[in-house]
Structure formats: structure tokens, C-alpha cells
Amino acid sequence: MASHVIVVDTTLKRAIVKVTPGNYLSDILEEACEKLGVQPTQYSLKHNNKSLDLSRTFRLSGLSSGARLELVLASRSPTPVSVALQLPPAYTSLVPNGRITECFSSNTTLWLILRKFESMAGTNMNFTARRTQQQGEREGSEEGSLSFYERPVLNIMGREVWKFGDLQKTLRQLGFSNGTCLIKLDFRKTNQPYEEVMIQIKEYFEVEYPLKSEKEIMDQNPQGSSESDKKSARESSELLSEEQKIISSEVNSGEKLKTDCITQFGQESTEPPICNPADRQISVYAPPSTQLPRAASVPYNSGDFEPTTAHAKLHQSRLSNSSQNKRLLSDAEIENLNREKAEKLANMSRISIKIRFPDQSSILSSFLAKETGANLYQFTTGLIVDESRPFKLTWHDRGPKRIPNNNKQLVKDLGFQNRMLINFSWENGTEISKERAPVLKPEYSRKAEEIPIPDVAVDEVADIKEPMEKEINISEKKKQKAVGKWFKGLIKN
Image (cartoon, rainbow, N blue to C red):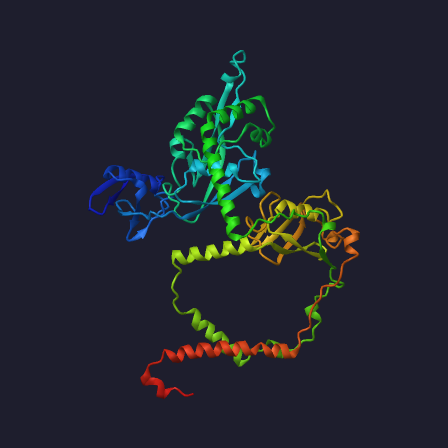
């Protein structure tokens, strides 16, 4: 049985749209806007004053047949959307878990998302300029006539997108204005000559990320290079020579911006990074001598776990402060905070990094702000006994994150700050019996010293109560100021 919905705009004009359970709400919006003569990119749908998720199908939207939908103006400012790209089997070995995640603006097209993932540092991929060579019927013909285009096919929430016109749609047009979006990538062979498709791509899309050069495609092909791949790289670089000029001008402007930043925040450091551990000042700490934690050896005192009156008052004052409404930061204030954070990172010249190994030993050393993840991996390789064994370095920032072994800078790109703790672990895991095996080389393990653990005296514990009492007094004074004049006589001092 056919269903329909009624879309009403702000001028009370009506448009009846026939729907099926598999229709997406974004398609319903486009059809309704076409009937009403408006641009679908500027509007959204509401039902009972609630915004609808345009990425869902009619079956999953909770709407009934004959529902009355409101056509309202959408926000013009773009919003961030976290996009995860699930790679095909040919590329799963190049990235962890076979998935790349990046944040994009909601007005970014699907084609530019693919091009951005292609140009990301540390990935060796080719999504938009793939070609295949067909053998069989036309073996006697020229090699160029046997080259066919292999198009990318995107699966977004069960919807397949592969036409060039559909790849020009933005995330907002597909219903993703915020939150997350999962895109599954696959490739499909076509009967279109590769040269004709390259011309169509140049006509369809305004290229912001240039196609890869011949050498890059050869180096980044996981299946190995072939003559057809070399020719496709050569032709793609020739077809997009004009776009390369535009990109070069953007790079020059970026260099000028970098020069301005150096002038504003001080001269760029010319000190070269140190990758050899012998040339760097390091501190080596030995693993614990016993498996019993240090805290377990402290005598038990039940009074340490009993909250005092000061603790109760402090907890109550914090609860009352957190229950009060607070004004949200404006765009200008958020921009100032981001600028201050960027200035703080730009002024940071050195950071202190502590690497903890599986045998519970650790090494502390300082690094330059401009050093990269590759320098950190090279430094760590010079510390361990088995240098040929693969390993990984992780750090915690709202969850564990793996440090990439590429040219991303530790402070600027990864957001490292002073006094960072990094965990060392083997790539393929290790047995429990071998976790305590020594990891460091003998010349470093001999220099190891015990980690100094200060003993907290009773007087220092008593000094903690003073700031607690000050915080309680401040909150009580704020409460007294809010009391009216006619109640002052009832307050007991």
C-alpha cells in the first residue's frame, strides 16, 4: 500500500510526496522542495516541532502515513561531522582496524572527503584514479584502449552512492548535520575508458586536493605497480596541471603564513632533533623490586577513610555550585580560548616524555617541540634489546591513542604537552611469562635507579584543610550576599 506525507512550508503551501518504507527523508526533502520551488540545501524538516534525522529511512523515522511535516529554514553555519571510512580488503593492512576517522564540515562533498582521505599523511591509498586493464577480446588493439576506470562505490547507511552527480552531494544533503557517519568503500569495474572518465571528473568537480603524481601512485599501490598504473598516473597529472598551479599558489600562501607566525611567536628553533639515545640526556628508572605495591605496605588506619566535617561541607558547596545555571561561552570567547591554546603550544620549545616498558622500567627524557613521531620511534628503537621486533607507542587522551610513526609533530599535530606518559607495547603481544623479561639494553639498565617516592608527613596532611576551609568560607559568603536585607536579622553569625 502506497503511503504519503504532506510537507507544508512557511507560506502554508502544501506538497504531497509519495513514499515507500525504504525512502530516505533526505530524498523526501528534495522532492518536496522541487515541488515547492525552493533549494533543498537551505531547508530541513520538522514533525511536531522536533527536527527529523534526514539520514534515516521512512520506516525507521517513526512517521505514519499522512504525517504533516514542516519545511523550516536550516542553519547556514556548517557543523562538524565525524566521518569514519571503512576501507576495502586491499587497504585494510595499511591502517589500524582498516578504518580512517576524520572530522569534516557538514558542507563537504563526498568526493572531497575521498580526496582528503587520499592526501592524509601516513596513508598510501588511491580511491579516485584507479584503472583496470581488460584482457581477452581486444588483445591486438593498443594498450590505451584496454584501460577502463574503476569507480569508487560508497555505502552510507545502506545507500549506495557511485554516480558523479551523487558524489557532489554534501553531508548535510544526505542528512548528516552532526554526530558521526560511517562510509564503507568498495570499487566496481566499469566499461568506460579511463581517459574519458578523467575528463568527466575534471568537468564535474572543482578539485581542491590534487590527484597523486605518478611516483606517489607507484609507491602507494599495495598490489604492486603495473604499466596501466603508470600510464594512469601520467595522464592524471597531465589533465590536472592547472589545478597543480592553484595548489602551488596555496602552498606559497601557507609558507607566508608560517613566516608570519614565526615573526609573531619568535624565531623558529634551528636545533636539530636528537634521535640517538646516547646523545640525549635521559633518566632510567628500575622496575619495582617486589610485586607487592608500595601502598599495600602502609599500615592500615581506619581514620584515613572517615570523612570529616570539612569534607562534608566542601562536598555540599561543590554540589550547590554545580547546580547553578552558567552562561555558555560565546563564539568570540571560544575563539579567544583556542587562540590562547595555539599561542601556548607555539611558545613551547621542549617537552618531557616518560616511556614505560612492559617490565615496569621507565625512561625520562626531553624532546623538542618540532620533533615528530618518527623521531620518537627511532629514539625508542635505540633503547631496546630487540630492535628488529615491531612495537607501538600509545598515550591517553580521552582514551588510548596510538602515536603514528610518521612526520607529524609531537606538539603541533599530536597536541603533546609537558610531562607526557607513553606506554610501550609489542605489536603482536607477548606471553605473560615474558612480560617481566628485560627490554632495555644492558648499558641503560645498569644506570637504572629506584623511583623516588616521598613520604607524606602528618603535618602536610593537616595543611590540606586550610584551602578547603577557604573554599567553604567563600561559598558561604556568596550565599549570605544573596539574602535580602529583611532577613539579615535572622542570620546567626
